[in-house]
Length: 115
Length: 112
Image (cartoon, rainbow over all chains, first blue to last red; front, side):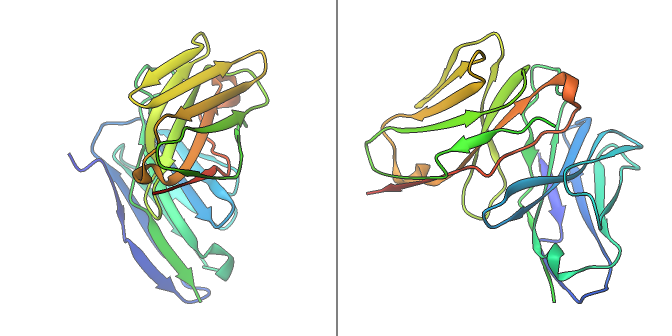
């Protein structure tokens, strides 16, 4: 099993450009999450989804949009990239939080630099 | 939303010593998870403890939970250089939504 796969692994954008980060999981998980990690800030939740077709805002949603058209995929979009969005982005997935096997599985991260 | 706060922010010990890190949270929880992050990698789940449990073991890991103090601790016994990583707690409450939130973590350095 591949687990959680993020595409791409690295990306450099110019200010104002747009891009989409793809997260794919093959574990049939209901929940999926997007985080960003900056030095000294820990992981901050951007958006999450509790099922196909549903999304919700996390702690730092501004400047990002998401879509969950298929259960296995969770897309994170930057419509107009800003230098403040330079970060490492992590995707994660899990079964429903109320079930016994509720641990989250993480992707390997996407390093995004906006210049 | 529920979020844990890890303490200390940084911890440096020698191989063979025990490492203890703590997590505090603000509201009641259903469960609390601990994760490890090696430098530059995604988080890896270590252990989950439910609100009705007080202690749980997994190999060299021991997690305790004190719901009256709203705190949890992670003990790593006989630390190894390979334990060098950041450790995060994630308290979860079904009444505060389905988000899984993390704090800033504890950075553990184990030196030979």
